[in-house]
Length: 628
Image (tube, rainbow, N blue to C red):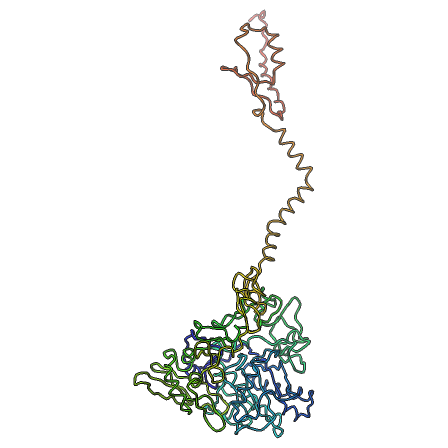
């Protein structure tokens, strides 16, 4: 809704400032590109205007998308057509309703309840008729990524040119992306002006609105580029959209700065496995089990990389109608819909749900401040049974002021203060002050189309005890999201939890651990054994040499001599014979004689003999007979 907090992406436990304080925040242009996957639906009237020619309808849809995409590119937003549905056999909803709001509501219901449709960020319905009570288009505001409310419609009659209708289409898509009317924005006439004047560019106010949506955590589905196999376009390398047959597209050669992508061929560079996506890092896939989208509240599920794709899986959440908030309300499109959460999102964190008497008193009036919807003739009064599903009534001190509207206060029983608001956001914007679908309005009941009905009307049809063995819950695809400790798809075997839709919840380190064990333990052992095999002879010789070097002290001791039986000393010959016979046996006694050390295993070379004694000097010979 224009200028209103994105209910679809908030939780009742997340207390944030009112959107009206954030809506004009100034911030630099977001550096990352946002990709809007657009699903276009062409009604039977427009199909007839194109002469029931399917090819002509396809070409027209592609041309419309390309022109609108060029309008959003200055905001770093890309509009990519990924789904085209043609109601060739008739319109499944009433496109001739009394108000554009009823047509939009019918289209949203059709989108949320029709199986087999491709998941898109926004679904837009082209209706081949003129304006409805002066309204050329209508959209929910700030609801991008919502499976039901991320919708818009536009009237594309035979008298409107393709180029002329692009402004209307861009205007309604801008609403879904959180942009409100910018009539008061200075600088001229822009696309988000409340009246169609054929403008072709967005204002800075619209840019701020979109940035505020991103700052609040909205638009989480816009981070992933679309799957090239689902893109409906005329392939062109260099348009920054990965078309069929391309691995990547980073723009022209001059502007491309992606090392993973070859701009000239739109193919991956050598050694690269991916070029973009939340699960792509340094040109390689992130490990399976790496978180890529966190859980956003009780009714949402986290998503994980699967290890084989650079894109994060689609956003999955608990099946509509699953009880939440202590079973007083229900999950709807990934959000636990409560009165308290809606009051806080609209009027600030100090507000909460008013007493039931406020709803009864206000919604039975059937005016701008209390009703159960509108028709071409005016507001619809609520019945007492449905009063909790009409206008939202809150209570609290100092609610935040709203823009483009007014707040009314009144009291019940003179003590209970109630207030609601009339949001004057233009005829193409639904009232954001109405109670949301899935809000609990009684025991086992929920609000559905401004009526308090049995909660089964929300479409919950999963028996978790049978399908998930009481160890998980069903997601919006009907598959089990298993509790931690149990493995998908049926939660009947041990595992790490998660579902087949959201990716593996556990980072598989078995390959890494196996490689570490191999390189750090097994491989060194194999190398050592191989070296030992080739050097076995040298090792054997070394071992034998060590045995020969064993010390004598380790040999068995000599037997002791018997000195008591024979005290007669032996003669020299006998002793010599004994010495020769037992020369290698130690003699152990109390007073062993001194023995020279045993020769070494490796005897030292004999010492050089000592030099002979010096010869005395010659004595002179004297002849004693000589006469002196």
